[in-house]
Length: 197
Image 1 (tube, rainbow, N blue to C red):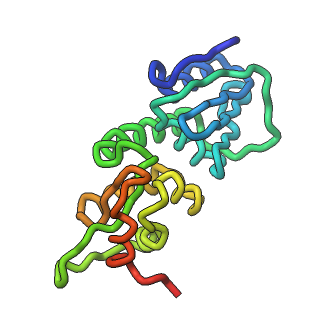
Image 2: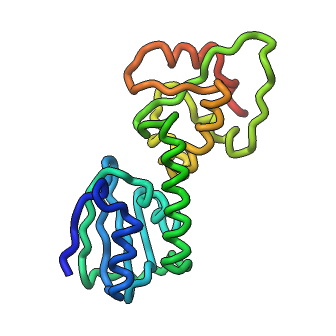
């Protein structure tokens, strides 16, 4: 069964649904804009997935939000690993939920190539309360590294990093710029948090 196409025409959850119903064993190779990932099926059930440093369910969710790229199904390709334990239905329901959420996030975060930086804040402006995950993320924002780069460094999915950034952007703590744009790095030095010791 030779199946290949574009993610812009057929989203990944729909593609996997087609193949899983047929009970096939093989691997999807998904070529995104930045990375290539694989999703392995055994008798139609997803058993393993990998993309970048992510493995298992988080890798499936990461690839499911990709709107650009190509996929191809490689029949008979197998893996010894079993890193996915959820049923295809549960996986795809969560993937679809994240895809909907990603559409909301992408209004403020149109590309993972953008670089987050701290915006200037007036003295005495409202205090900002951050969760432990947001604090970890704040320590990685340096005005030079892209969202994708921060996610790779933290070994978090780009979706999870974007979700945290969305709140920071909405509150005015952080803004985004294209890589190479001037100004943001010097702003960081002036107003960024002190390094954690």
